[in-house]
Structure formats: structure tokens, C-alpha cells
Image 1 (cartoon, helix red, strand yellow):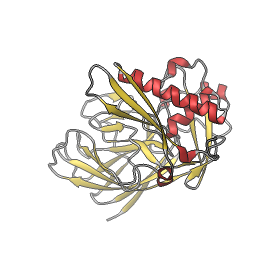
Image 2: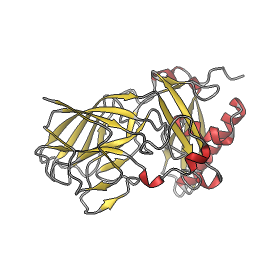
Image 3: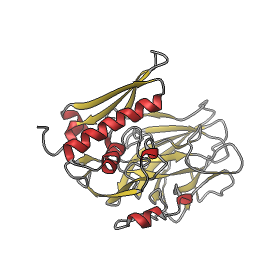
Length: 313
């Protein structure tokens, strides 16, 4: 079995089944994909808010590839064994008016740069966050002809933002074109379930995968075998603050729960509303608690006490 590396010069910003592969590998080979951050290298440490507001959003997302797998045909499946992620020491999270769960409540953009130190960051006052890196986007080329923005996920994978696609996970994707033409990017150093402000910790990163080919494997959409540690272990050493909201509209229940978590963070840490939302986006986990009591659904938002540097008074 061979190992391959594809550098970040092999970057695309759309799904298109007609893109030629930048690399072809054999089943069982490993490949390291060197990925730009989701902005395609436009965001950088020291960037000002006005500079951020002017960046070209049509270049989102930058994904590395395509990587063809020899012998892959429609009706097969790729099994992507996630072996390693290596960040480059920094990441960013933003607020963009009109986008995200509460985008209608903010009129000006905001940008927070995280300094990543090993497996943690202390870049937000009063908290220490554990990193759990993963790719927001892992996908194969779509069945449809044409060029498509990367924002919407689908049966091909893509922009799923499933934070459990960390080291040790095995992701399976159906193959739609010969070679499959795998791409990955939008790496996050950390993210809460929901990614509520529009970003996780967006980071340039290198991901290493082992690619297996499952011939004639019936699969209608992405499937992942996740590792047992779905929450950073340190977070399990203390209780969780849980904000529970119910509403006939699941999205409205989510919005209400996030607002309550933001208010808690503002009161406890003295954060602005913007920075409270950014912190929620990278550490708050939204979970559907019930869908049975129609028409009302319930959402619970989980915030780990272990992130706080000082105990609650």
C-alpha cells in the first residue's frame, strides 16, 4: 500500500463531476490532503473586521482534490478511515449578518482569531477549550452534471459538518462517478453540534485518510462508524448546563435555547453578545430531545462546565 500527499495548490471551490482528478490512488492507499481554511486562504491572523467584511464569499469553501480511487464505479462505496489531523496553530470564527441560526439578529460582521496550542485554545477570556479536529466537508462528486456550490450537503457527503468525523472514525460514501473523485476541506479545530454562528474554528489543516473500496455496496447516503469518545474527555469531568426550549418550529426552539446559553455566557464571563454567539458555535451542542409531542418539539443545548477557568460563584 502506498502513501500519497496532495498539497493545497490542488484546491477547488465547487462540486463538478467533470473536474479531472489531481491524483489517482489504489484501494487501501493512504493520502494526506493539505487543506486551506474554508475561506480559501483569504482570512488570516491580524485581519481587520473591514477586511473580513470585504472577502470574496464565492471562494467558500476551499476543498482539496479531486482524488480518484482506481476501480471505483457507481454502485460501489468508499470507506474513508480517518487517521490524523494536524492544524497549523490558528483558526477563525465569524459572524456574518444574515447567515447562521441568529443571523437576522446581527447587523455588522465580527471575526475572532483563535491561537491553537497543541490540543487546546485559551483565546477566549475565561475559558479553555479542547480541540477535536475534523473535516466539515468530505465528499465524492455528485451524480448530476454541472457545477454546484459547496454549501449544501447530500447523498454524496459534502458540507455535513458532523464533528464526529474525527480521528478513528470510518466514513462510508456511495460512489456516483467512475473513480469517485473524493475532495475534503472546511477543516474545523472544534465545533459545537449546530455550528450556530455559521462557522466552527475554521483552520488550515492536513488530514490523512486510508481509502478502502467496497464493491457493489448498497448505500443511499453517508454512514459513519464513530469512535466511542464523542465528547472531549475533560468535558465529562464536570456537569453540563442544559438550556431546554420547546416550540412548534424546531428552528425556533433552537434559537431560543442558544439565546439563553448566550445570556448565561455574557453574565458569567462579561462577553459581548457577538463573542457569546461565537463561543456557542464552537462548544455548545444542540440536541433534539423529543419529536413525539406533535406539534411541539424540544431542543436541549448542552454547555460543559469544564470549559470555565474559574468555578461558578
